[in-house]
Length: 140
Ligand code: DQA
Image (cartoon, rainbow, N blue to C red; front, side, top):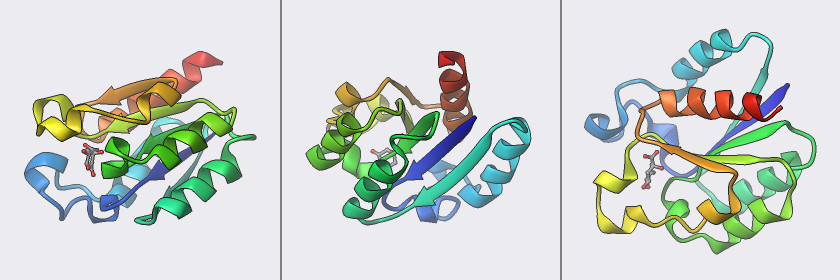
């Protein structure tokens, strides 16, 4: 099993950015724990603040990975290009959010990428990523 995590804008600042919403742990630290939780899964990680780089990554991995876990950050709410990229590949994509976007500002309640994704997990903090991997494993 090989799974790709793709994190979008501002998620490089996890641990520093709005810790009351996103927690105090950096993603690299969490990634070590995640890899320990799934010793039989190869988990690759990519983060970018640039929309086109996220699209390029989805194209690159979207035909040979067993799944993509995507936290598109704010692009979730308006990037039709990202939605098209997800539709263009055949690897299942699980949309994740650390926060419960439905408890927050109105604009965060709408995701343009959800219709292109296999499913959505949000609101469980960093544990949302583990849940997404479990869901992808269960598809097999
Ligand atoms: C987020 C929620 C988005 O609305 C926000 O723009 C983010 C992070 C989350 O993980 O909760 O950058 O995707």
